[in-house]
Amino acid sequence: MKRLMWYVSCCLMPLFGASATYANPEVKPNTDTVTGNAASLGRLSGTDRHQSLTATPMVASDILAQSPPPPPTPTAPPAPTEVPSTPPSTTTPATPSGDSQDVQEQLNKIKETPVSDSGYQPKTSPAFSIFNPVGFGADKNLVFFSLDYQSCTRGPTCVSDGGAGIGIGLGDATNSIGAEVSYALNSFGSSAAFGSGAFSGKLHKRVAEDTAVAIGWNQFAKVNFGAGRNGSSPSDYPNNSYYLVGTKIFRTVDDINQPFSRVALTAGVGSGVFVPYDANNTSLDRGGIGVFGSVGVRVARPISAVVEWTGQDLAAGISVAPFDNFPLVITPAFRDITGIPGQSARFVLGASVAFNF
Image (cartoon, rainbow, N blue to C red; front, side):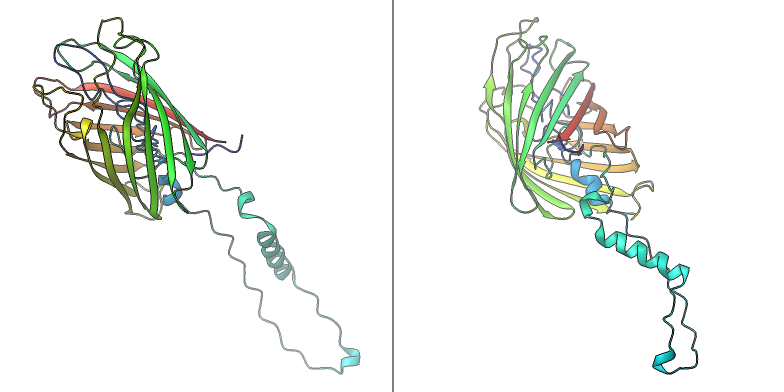
């Protein structure tokens, strides 16, 4: 296994991103079914409730935000002192001064040191999305894992539940196209039989150093092992949850260690789970297009604050990357703050890690 790596995002976003949990997006009236899947980047990116709260998205954020430290600036050697010329036969070779020798040795070391051995490692970044997929994604054999918890499922019966996800990023989003494939375990047995879940897919492209776009399909292939302990149907996640999304990262301050140094804006359109919630239309094949978006602000070096509209509801939370050199991202948040009639805000919690093989 190669060195640890960290996307989302964001992220996957989002992770994903990368980014890796999400709140239950869809619950049929009169049921307490938990739905969703592992996601960006941030994430097991591009998926729903278990979509990464870290942003696949998020793998890229620190790489974008911070360039490798520049080589040490050499000290200019002292100006030569003019001496009277002497015949060639009597000239004595000059001995370099101590300062000149030190500078030359430093320059030689820099030339001989490969970039990959320079000691620079990208640090883990907090997510810039909670539920929404983001433009960035995992690639280059990045494997990501996520766990999530929600205090209450949607619907008249409030039941706590959890889920998990696993995925891999392939290809090269910078030089060609990156691809993510993930599987979300939608429930630990409360709302669906343990093991029930679905596969999600995402194609993403980094079009600039700080900009990426993606297209994805959440839960394109479902796995059903039956109802959960509460007798709920195993899944009511819409069958046609496609999306197109883009993310742009702005550097408000050059030094990432300064407060409010980065702002990430995400905007997209999608069907299925991104369509405004309608209690009178719970068809898994319902049509329509919804608009979603996220604003993530790097409040401090290891913490970001996120507010987003999912197409159905308003969500807000924070994301924390507690360790500089271990890719763990934890994102507590609230879903259903507004947008779902009769539904009170629900607490959700996600955690994700990612490793490069």
